Amino acid sequence: MTAFGEEYARGLAAHNSGDIPARMGLYGVPLEPGMTALEVGCGYGRCVEGLRARGLDAIGADINAWLIEHLDKPYLQWGDVRDLDFADNAFDLVVCTDVLEHVAEYETAIDELVRVSRRLVYVEVTTTESRNMHLDPTHCVFLDRAGWQAALAARAEVVGHAGGFRFLLRKRGT
Image (cartoon, rainbow, N blue to C red; front, side, top):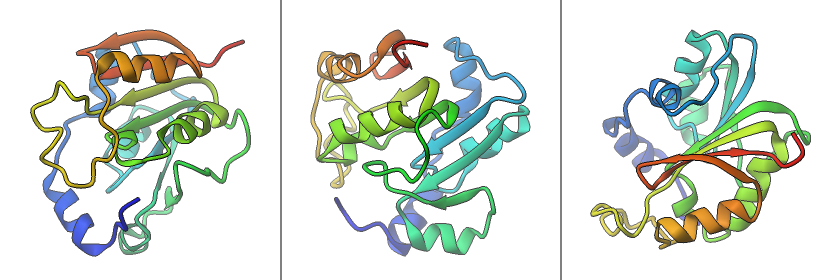
């Protein structure tokens, strides 16, 4: 996995993936006040802030220690998607956007997202069908839509998808 530090964080500041919570609502992800939520790969925490503004008890985790330290936001902390420091079933909703395609051990990462979720996991990934797939040198997983869906479905029930790269998962048995 690439080391993410100050240079990567400054590039991330220019990247705006839009209002992820609003997009999640359009795709039927329940965003109910009082729900607990974790965003993994939170970057600057924009999605976490959007979830908090909607009344969710949301926190974020990101592998970029430099970014977390310099943001000094108490609801953001360091975390590695491959080994999350949270209890099993800790969150009603786990959100992970534009992260898994950067993680060679993506299956381990998916297992971790499902493990810490009590109920739902929302994932957005870049697929090989995306014209941007090969523009980011930190991408190391090159799966098409069907490949991502199969990897996710092996670990949780896929209850919704949109655009071929957005997936809503429900933890089995919930």
